[in-house]
Length: 88
Picture 1: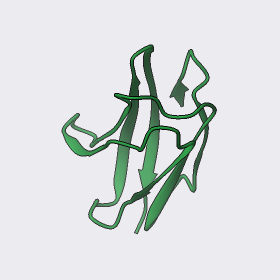
Picture 2: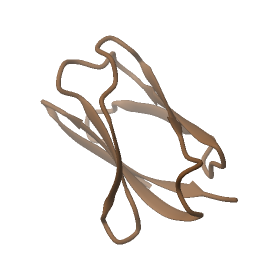
Picture 3: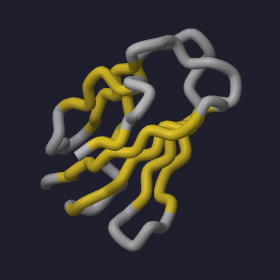
Picture 4: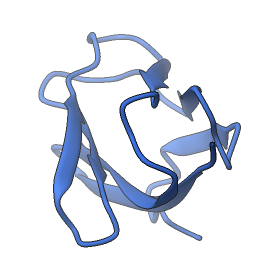
C-alpha cells in the first residue's frame, strides 16, 4: 500500500524486488528531497539523496535481507510512504 496524497510516486518496480528497485516519480526531484528506506522495525537502512531534476531513482538492494521494508519520499511539501518487499 502507498500513502501518497501528492501523487509523487508513479511506480515502484519490481516489487517484490531482488537486486534493485526503481522508484519512478511523477515530478522532478527538487532540492532537499530524500528517499529513506526503513526495515520492519523502523530502523533506517538507506538514505538516498537523488540529483535535482531526475524523475527516477534506482536503489541497489543486494545489501538488504529478504523481508518487508518501508520507503519514504521526503520533500519540502510533505511525505509519500509505501511498502517494498525484498526476495532472495
